[in-house]
Image (tube, rainbow over all chains, first blue to last red; front, side):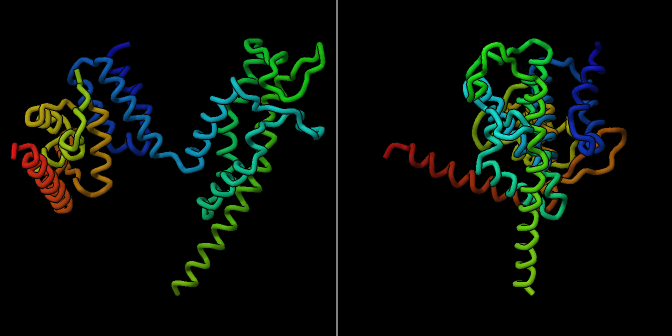
Length: 200
Length: 104
């Protein structure tokens, strides 16, 4: 693992469009002197900032929601029993009116470019901590079956929680997210049409 | 070892880059060395190129074709105007602060 390998690995974190423009210059600058931890951290920070700037609003919203759900998943019950046959478990934050507003806002902001898909993307990213918990349960690393913090209902003695149900809980909300995103998109298109008519 | 710029408007990477380019077009490494010599601030390469990206997007600096892989950057007219405005504002605040510090 020589310096050039490390530099090229760091540069790969930057977005493709940014690399096309600046990667050659930055690579030459990084190869001039030996790399220090401070320089590596500085380049990593720059790469992550550029990645964030290159992401769209749906991804950024999803990341914020993901961090909130990820932080809440340990101390608070974020999963609860569903009243329907499918899915058997739902993600509580997704059931709130606030989250519906977030999805409508997502679709509103992306009204000209696939608003439903933007809302799906936000929900998928936000649900990653829950899906990760399900994967860890499946691998036997995590055991949520006896822990009340995860479920709002009493688990019958001997009953185990299905990891697939936990993995599927965020995914089962995707169609609903698409619908709310489309609602937001409709609102956005209607509002922009009104603006165009008012100006003309 | 790259040091984090000191806090304050005079340590703002974008302002430092504009000030450096005010004396003529330079490529990235030369900008970094110039800033270190006149401001005593060592900008990290990541910080430098993040700031350069912003300045190019805002059309305050512009890349030029250069020999090799290092492109020089030059200050645009808009960049010169913005730099002048910011430095004049800093001078006004600095003069006011110094005047207030002087014993009555």
